[in-house]
Length: 433
Image (tube, rainbow, N blue to C red; front, side):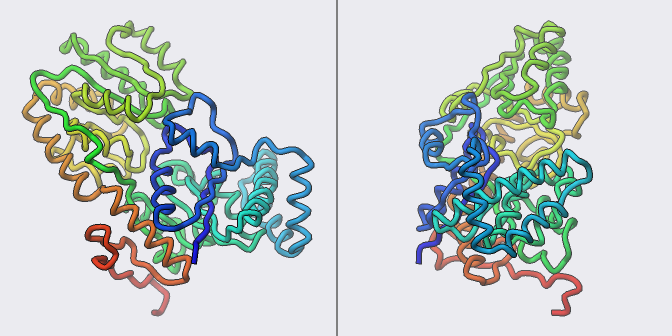
């Protein structure tokens, strides 16, 4: 039987959404028919690879939406099931933060949910998977109630996890059929914010990569090239990184930081670089394609993550697969990928001095960078393989949609399903089982 599911995102596909595309592709390869639905179309500056452009053409966008279509879709939902429609409206009004602004947002989510239900019915979809359950998580939850659908969530390291009360994470988790957590840390947060009877439906599936697609880098001589790849957002801690370059430039006059990406802070960051007179030490590249990012990795001595909050950044995996030494903040799921002093360097979040010192030590020691790079590549090849993580994801989807229990993190040995083993699922505390 063909399994049809919809992937619902707030904006899709963005330049940084390659991990979502990998998930969608893996499910499609395993016989799932995956419809992609996005609330909004990403800005043109988010355009990336040819594959992303193809995914844009395949994706259904809810907004903009004319009043005629909105009325028709909602009227259809009401006629099919007035009771479910009114229950969904009640959920939208009850599950919200206080205040008039929140009420208006919830009414928008309710309106979008009606469009999702109508589109799901047209495409014969009965299950919705939501990425990043903050705003679009409300849409998925309300749509499931309105249209008699099931839904699931993916939890990363920010978004809803940063303000679980505001985003009503408990309600979204407990009403879901299951949740995918990209790290054990994220799963722990899901457990913290929900009743123990729901814990066994939270599964750990890493974002993975194919290490063979990345050419290994060799570290030789004193380092000078630093690289950041990501969104220019407050959570990334980029002002601290720029300040660290200001300190490093005194002892490393040839140091250079390449900033790849874009985002709301770009203007402020460019002004900061000018104010500190660091123009010759820092270059803004904007968004680059995946191929261009791999070229940048080949010229980098260290990849830097200065974030205040994260999941497990895919760019860290890509750098480690490229045998580039990595320095990251010791937060959330990052230590599940990077072991301090073994496969990379971890520094306290928010500590600009530690950030500068760690970079100074890495740049000064090519032998250490080589050791870290070797261990980093091995770590990714062993525990963050895209084919095995995709196999876990497919297995969880298939079993959960069939109403069967699944372990927290299925163990796979190769992609042959006959070699799979499962970690026993612990009995939740207080269930009496």
